[in-house]
Image (cartoon, rainbow, N blue to C red):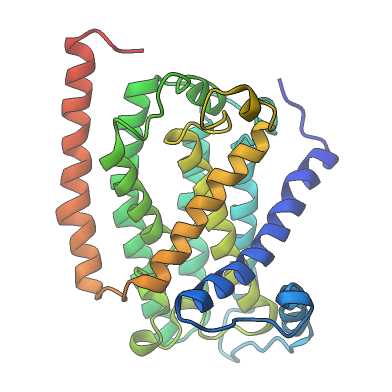
Length: 325
């Protein structure tokens, strides 16, 4: 049984906040490399203090609210979006025992909390009392909800293979072979669905400046805009955690060698998370944005049938050969 004390909570939240700040810098550096630019290199050595400068600028800016907006909901929407991305970290283990709580319903809790993020976006668009913000919020809600169905079916496929366990037991069940090897097509669908779920390029239609100004957050400035921005990047880090747990084996080393076993499991977990985050950034730099009809068609006509079709043969194979966990 794990008891949540303030020190443990801070031990999870503070690294996450630092990770979000430097993930923004890493994204700008990687995209600059891909586009043959220098990227941020003025503030501090190699631009390492750029996140501090950006944060200071946003904190010092004046928050402006539309005169016809619902003030309370308008202010609470970005706070709710950001807080949900922090609360969900409670059930993601970094190593064996390094987790606030590891219940058997941890997976359900994680994706229930991530699904609640759509409410912050809807409230932001509606409370702004702006047509542009409301249209952007509706597009975002439709996109997030449509891809959650396929994500649920993908996770059912993984749980059929490893059994209904908590996160740590799911990792231990992959000691012989990673789930991502026999379920590689499922891993690809999961990664693409997570891109759409977190509104990341090439599926960042709610924030497509050429179509709906800036989406649901068009009326926000100062820290309101920053909290939406931080929430998006915190969700990126959050969703790479379950992806690391369910497919590439979590925190155990890549190879069962004595030299690799000397490295702490939290380091291996962080390396795998960073590889998935690099993939997020590379996709943004390499692929153009989808049209909205292409995005919704991909979710409804491709991923939903494919994810459902994977559940049936995988479960049938396990039952036939009596391989059920």
